[in-house]
Every structure is written in structure tokens, then in C-alpha cells.
Image (cartoon, rainbow, N blue to C red; front, side):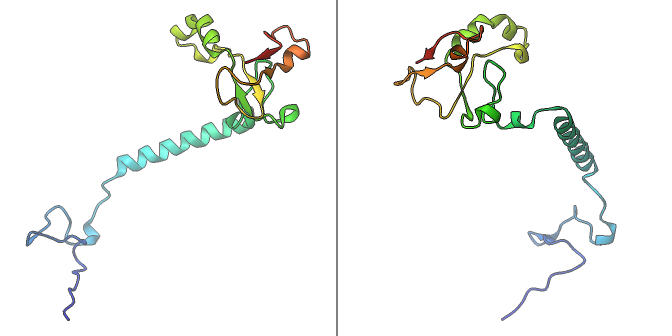
Length: 149
């Protein structure tokens, strides 16, 4: 049984079609750093990610990464809404149509959707069972209906 001995002075693919690979240095000590630009981009990327993370932790609401909010500003899945972790938007098409000028201007962060915190999103629309609007029951002026289907 014969064993092929690897030439330690050449790379793992030292021969292609019986010829030496001219792109790979024959001496590993002469190999240079070829990905400086990629390494620089990678380091800058991670500095940016760390900056966003630090800013989010120090000034933001970390629960917003996992849970949405209802039309009253309550964070779903947290506090009084602990058992209601999902957001359901019963009138999304109406809300978007009424705010199409904001969308056309690219001001997406100002678009307000009428969302309700629910235990589980309805499987179909219209729903088979109505979803009560807790804001209506509490007497909030911004509530639009007692229940949604």
C-alpha cells in the first residue's frame, strides 16, 4: 500500500493537472494577507452592530424586539398583557389606506396601525368568534368597536 506524502512547502492543492499552482506561494512564510479589505469591513460591521446593541439596551424597550404593541401603546406579552403575546390588526387595510400619504412620503415610522393584543391570532378572516376590544370596554376614546370579527 503506497501513501502519498504531502509536500509541506506547498498548499493542499499544490498540483493541478500535473503542474505547480503558480498562485500559491511555495514557501508558507512568504504568504501574505490577502483579505485585509474584508477583515476591515467585518470589523466595521461588528462595531456598528455593537453600537446598535448598546444604544438599544440603554435607551430602548428590549421587549419591543419580541413583542408588538396595541393601539393604546401597551406592549403585548408584558405586564398587564402577559398572557396576550400576539398582535392582531383587525383593520390593517383601512389603516393603511387612510395613511397612504405617509407611506407615499416614506414616513413608515409614523404609520399607526390599530392592533389588539391577543392570546392567539385568529385562524381566518373574518373570524368565527368575535375578538373583544379591551379599549372599548375600558372607555378609551381611540377605541373603534366593541368587538372585531
